[in-house]
Amino acid sequence: MTYEFEGKTEKDAIEKAAAELGLESDQFDVEIIETQKKTLFKTGYVKIRVHTDEESTPGVKYDDAEDSAPVKRVVGNPIPQDEFEQKLVTFVKEVVSKMGYEADVEVMFREDRKIGLKLSSDSSSILIGRKGKNLDALQLLANVYAGHLGREEVRVILDTENYRVRREENLVHLAYNTADKVRTNRTSILLEPMNPFERRLIHTTLNEFSDIETKSEGEGLYKQVRVIYKGNY
Image 1 (cartoon, rainbow, N blue to C red):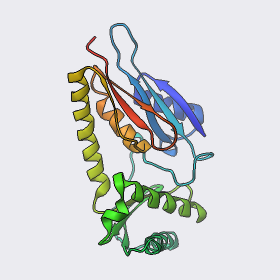
Image 2: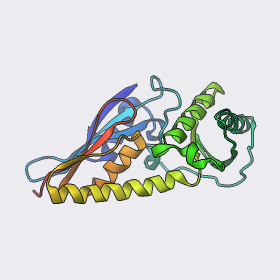
Image 3: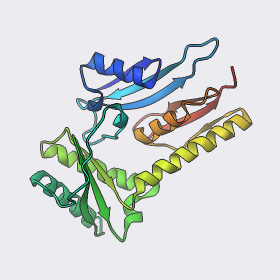
Image 4: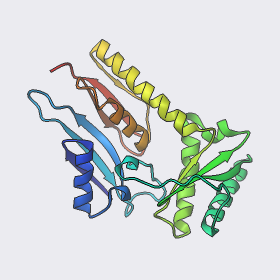
């Protein structure tokens, strides 16, 4: 199911969503769809879209609410520790093999309701794909398989060559550079299509600027963020 909530801040909107849905804040995915800074004449707000598991596509579990609650991350033994982990690792290796490539798969970390898998391969660039879309697709399949194993509550994160960290750093730089451009040209810029987690990173990064506004545009999983110059108030 998908719901929309609005609050004075992102935290306020998430708390409203959790209270109304009767869920913990780490039990649903959050996508920021619009922000409005407080000005002399307008009240500031953040509008979010909440995705719950009842009707969402199995496995589309981007970690949009990662900072909403403390989690315990265990980075330790990379060898699967139980039947679920072993089946998950084997599944990912077999999918990659059927694509025509080889990869070693090991556990990166374990958290409550989350597990990270690291893929090591000579074909990492192909497994990542353009803008990470191949890696996202593999991650989707891994999450669907986790659901088939009766572990729908577990989010599976796949990474290779530390791509996801590097991607986040690049997106933060992109956000700042885009803000400078729209401020200089007093216009707006529509960014490339991104998944919910990437869009939220753009929204959150630029939320600190009173003269910049962001909102998501488009339909489907991969929407675009428009960065808009509002001027000084």
